[in-house]
Every structure is written in structure tokens, then in C-alpha cells.
Image (cartoon, rainbow, N blue to C red; front, side):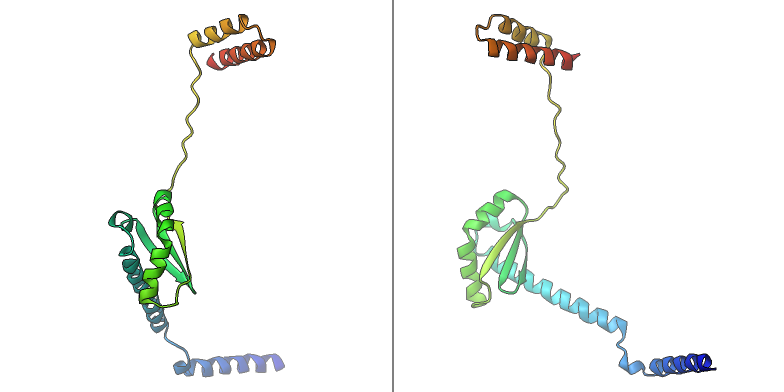
Length: 165
């Protein structure tokens, strides 16, 4: 009997909650607001980027790809380490330019490299010397007066012979 009452109570509670639709926000309105905030932040970052691009030479400004801010720290993204190191020299000029538009808002700039492609490291298999080179090393080892060097050259020739066959 108590179990039936609790089920009925839960059902009536759910029905009441469902009838108060005005309390629950429409998911599509939440999505629109969220997307609006994201779009506004993106537009602000693009505006910052345009301001920063005017503070560096044209050749370098093409490599300023994106920027983000968190508190008083601005992070700039570039495509290669070469451009990142050059941008570091312009940090004082960039901060000065930002200070003209947004006084005392940014205290530091961090520069990051944006990986645009997956970089695969290709390791080239070492080439073993030809038979003539190995024979030359063997001959040099036979005429070597220093015993340590003679032994090292013989080992090298022996290793190269085994790898080449």
C-alpha cells in the first residue's frame, strides 16, 4: 500500500513539473545564446588579431594565425617556430599596441606554434658503404701502428661486412 502511494506521488510530482513548462528553458534558446557568446568571443579575437597584425611587418603579420585571451594573458598562434621566435622580439611592440586600444588589460603575451598538419618524422635508413669502402677500411686497419685504432677499424669493417650482406 505504501509502495503504491509513493508511485502515485512520484507520478503526480512529474505531472506537476511537466505542467510548469515556463520554468524550463527552451534548449534551442540556450543553444542560440551559447552560440552567440562563442561568436562574439571569436569576433573579439579576430579584432585583436587585426590590431596585432598592424604592429608587426607584413611578412610576419601573415603568420599571426589566431589569438586567445585568458585574464590578462594573450596567447598568439603562428604556424612555424621560425615565426614564433621572430614574434617574440616584437612582444614589447605588441603589448604597446594592445595598450593603446585596451589600456591595462593585457600584461603578457605567450606565443605558441599551431600544428597545422600532422608532421611525420621520416627516419632514413642508414646506407651501408660499398665493398670498396669496406676493403679500404680493412686495409687501413692492417697498416695502423696504433693497436686501439687497429682493433676499432677491424671491428668497424667486420660490422659493415655483416650489415652489407
